[in-house]
Length: 175
Image 1 (spheres, helix red, strand yellow):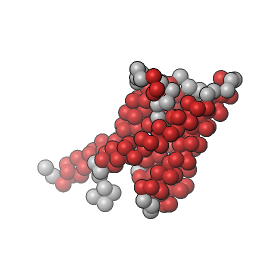
Image 2 (tube, rainbow, N blue to C red; image 1 turned 60 degrees about the vertical axis):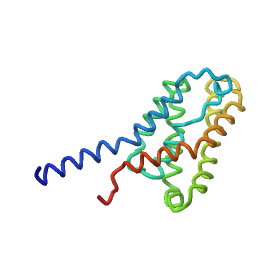
Image 3 (tube, rainbow, N blue to C red; image 1 turned 135 degrees about the horizontal axis):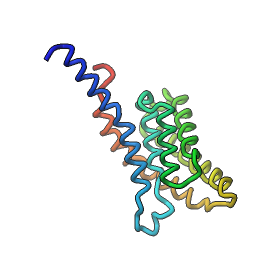
Image 4 (spheres, rainbow, N blue to C red; image 1 turned 180 degrees about the horizontal axis):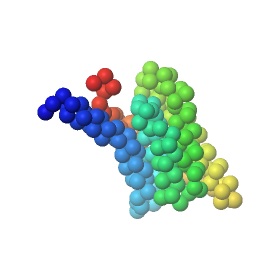
């Protein structure tokens, strides 16, 4: 194998590995849409895709551009039957928030990132409730959204741990 062949293989590998953030976010998004026969989870299923968007925008923002975040949010809106563009808009706002705070998040410990996510999750839930209530022209049950936010916050460490394992598969920028 010549040097040129090795460089081409390396680029392809980086390219394929570069899709891992998209794939993991998409898998979490699809997992949210599955129909579960658990009465207590019916209206309280966590915003798993929000965790992925938040995580990847902190640690690999170049692999989660605005256009991709928008498309993932739009897909979630289509699959969930929610107001079209709501999640796309909220994901973009989360990305903007995280990118603007970037260094503050990267230089801190997990608990600081979790605290930041708690604020993002509660704001996301509240914005979802407001937009859905306006769109449907009737007040939605705020307790469902609050429950979803709390479930999301509770699952954050587990999902971040799994995403961290995936992140370890990515090629270092120094290689």
